[in-house]
Structures are given as structure tokens and as C-alpha cells.
Image (cartoon, rainbow, N blue to C red; front, side, top):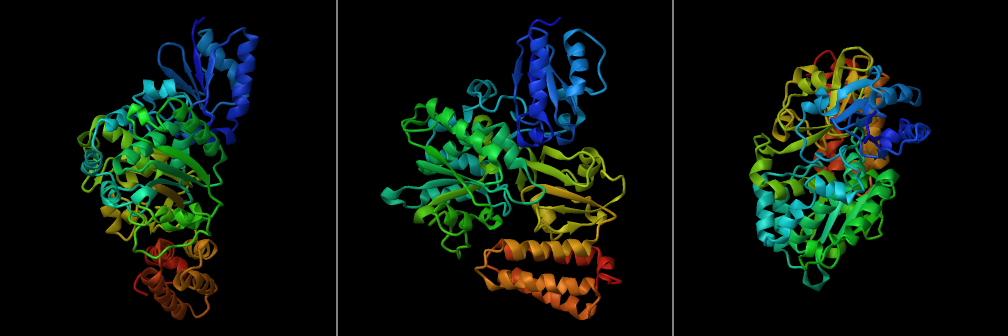
Length: 519
């Protein structure tokens, strides 16, 4: 029998929803019955959600995976790994050799699923805080230049170059009131969960990235604005911030640098619009979350009227590896102006849903065939929506498009936060178009007329089209309405809502009773 053995069961929200807590309790019980006191680590998910709860066992020969596991399978698993018994049907082999993981390029998520999320010892053992330590010995301008050179762009939606935003805040005058780092963790797009997985599986990477940003622009305070629907992430972040502060990575002398930076966690109230940076800032200030007119940009007048860096979770968590391994290392991943890696979240009608991290450039079709494994229904895939509920619907003729910002933009689509939702051939695309308008009508902050009124009229018009009421006239009206929303809305909420609507009409005209795309 093996003398020393360690078990890993994810403790993140997805695994818990699928029975991971009950599995961990049963495992501890069966180990106690055997008189063993082996360590059971609650790690983050590896991203293979269809295999959760995933149990990994390290008996001195690397980690081996079993999944999905229920309590009934535990006895066979323990016989296999403790008593050299036959492998059970849920045995998958060495975890790192699994095709889903082996085909990825994990930089930002390199530790997620490997470590105990709340163990500083684990984090440090896996190259944690190396980037921050290097940053403490650098001038602010040098830190910013490293980020600029890396080619890192915002991983939220607009894909604005991160280093340029930081340079603007560094150059801005703040006076005694200071500058701020704000993390947009209001991950509200349907089909996206990368932020949650990282915050629950590797929270110190976000803390480290925010601390580096603070050193880079001269900010001494940071806020994480977290959506209220993520209670597990909130609990993990609270504990991680406390541990980092106790260890000297936050506070009056960050990593012994003599420079101040501390973090505060704030919970949103569940408004999708607060994922837009200016609405988020209003909410942080205690106001109703509503769009601010720009200019001025938040980098000049942001939180409490001060220069503010606003980046999302993945952007900030990507910074430590850039500082630790160099801008050139990070830049060598990707293609064109899309450098580094992107976390892709597969959802909808897929056989294998979950999170993977890839260098920019893989085609959408390869993503579906290699990682998603086709549809869960077994029917042919008909459409993919990339970039959240405001992203365009892409037909199979466009699935050879590579996953990068410019290639998708050329096809009237966007990569956004990396969410990919798949639909099979039973989908009604007119219904999906109506859903997009309805989503906007419900989630609009109401500040501008094109978004507030246009979305409501859009729902009504689409309902008439679906009922075949003056279809040709209403399609013309809908096109004009979409044009107005796109050109006149104050923010991307109203400006992007037409994308799923017009793409559905263009690529799936038959669902709207149109014989060709020119109608």
C-alpha cells in the first residue's frame, strides 16, 4: 500500500454544484475507515466541467484523474490507487496527459486546478509573486513599457491595449487624492465563467496583478467589483486578500518595497450594465449604475474623479507572467495584433463544455471539433455566438475564422470575453434575435433613448415578424432601428445589441421568412 498519498477535489462553484462537497465528505469518511489520514486538497477546477466532480490522486507518480466521480465509485478508486487494484471505469489516466489539457497553452491559468487556492505556500511554489518582486525593483515607466511591449489587450470586450491605458493613468496628475486600480469582476455575459474559475482557483494571481498595476501607475488603493451572483468567489477573495496582507504582499510596504497598495472587495447588486466601466464606477461610488458620457475617460477622471485603471480579471491576472517571464515570452504566443492567450469558455449545446486557454489563432471549427466534441444532442451544429449575448451569430461558412480580434471584426463579430455558445440545427434564430433585444430591454440602464426605447420597439417588431405581420415592412423597420441603436447609443449595450439581430437575419434568413440575404 502506498505510504503517502494526496487527493484533489475541486471546491469551485461548478464542481460543488455537481456534488464535489458530498464527494469530499465521503472520501474523508472512507479514508478514516481505513485508518488513513491522507491529505484531501480542495483545488480549483481544471476547466473540464463535463468531468466534474473530478478526483485527482497523487501517489508519487504524478497526478491521476478519475471522473466524473460519485460516492459509489470511491471504493473502486481507493482499491485502485491504494491496493493496486484494477482501474475503475472512471479512471482517465495521468491528468497532464489528457488531450484537453495537453493541447492548451496555459499562462494565466497555469496554476488553476493545480494548487490549493488559499495556500500561499502552494502559490509561491508555482512561481507566484515572482512578477511582483521584479516589479518592486523597477521604475513605474519600465513596468508600463513591459506591458506595452507584451501586446496585452483588455480581455473584456473592447480589447484596448492595456499598456496604453496604464500609461495614460501614470501620466495623469492626481494630486493628494491619489489614483485607483479597479478590477471589473462583474462577469455577466451568458456563456462566460473564466473570471469566476480564476478567482476561485487562483485568487493570488489577481491580487498580484493588481499590486503590479498599482506600482506601475502610482496607485495605492484597488477595488475588486464582484458580481453578487458569485458567493464562492467572494468568500475565496476575502480570505486571499487577508492572507496576502498578512504576508506583506498588500499594505504599507508591498513585498518589502516601501510602497503602499491595498485592496478592497465590493459586491455589485446584479446589474448587467455595471460590467460597463463607467456604470461600474458609479456603482462603486454608491450611485445607481448608469453610463457616463465620455470623454473624460476613466483614465483621466474615473473613480471619485481621479485617474483610474479599469481592467477585468483576466487582463490583470495575465500581468504577473509578463513581469515574471518577460514581455517577449508572452508576445511569442498569438498572432498579428492578438498576442498572448485567451481563455475560451465552451457552453451551450456541446458535448464537452468548460474552460480552456489557447494562444490566439485557432479556428472556430477546430475549437468545436477538437475541444467541444460536437453537440450534446448529437445533431449538427448550426450556429455559434461568440462574445456574449451581444455577440454575432456565426454560421458554418464562417467557422474557419481564426480566434483573434481583427479576424472576427472583419466578419462583423467580436471575441469579447471569449465565451462561445453553440446551437444545433433545431434552433430558431428569429427567437434568438428576439432574445437579444429582450435582453437589452431588461438590462438597459435607461440613460439614452436609442437603447432604452429602441430595444423595446425591437422586441415588438421582431414579434410581428415572427407572426408574419407585414414582414417585409417590419424587416426594413428593424434594420433602421438597429442602425439607430448602433450609431446613437451612449455605450456598447445599445451599440452592440444589433449585432446578434442583424447577423441572424443575414446568415439565417429562412428563419425570418426571407428567401435570400438581400431581402
